[in-house]
Length: 174
Figure 1 (cartoon, rainbow, N blue to C red):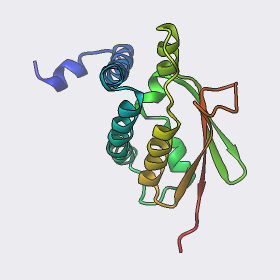
Figure 2: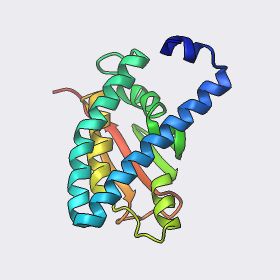
Figure 3: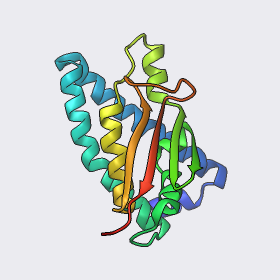
Figure 4: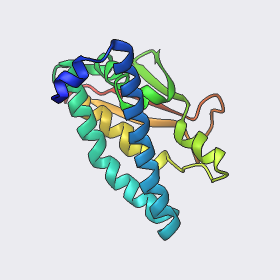
């Protein structure tokens, strides 16, 4: 049986469950490689590689989602809001997207990465530097006029109601 036939034979509920499994598998693989480097070479080296990986992966992910959603070249914050809802993380983390005036606020209310590290008695992942690359790169790939700033993210959390939060705004073309 070919891939298309196997997937077509599944119910909608089974397909949704499979997407959930794939998302969790992706995140587990991301965590396994990170923790391997962290154990062998330390947090600083692991973070260096994490940033390097996200520089490329976030663009790949954003381009594929943008194409899937058939977004125009400059979909603005509306397009970014739509695209954020289709990221791998959207399937496994509890998040919310808010509008504040001319800005979009993305909040990861509950993060599987931080919860897993907490369960294992590990220090939280210092993800702010990675998040700046990840969220900024994702937004710029969706629309090159969009900018991003961190509002709260470990190790510089200022909002205890979420794991991290990011503000996006659109600059006008020059």
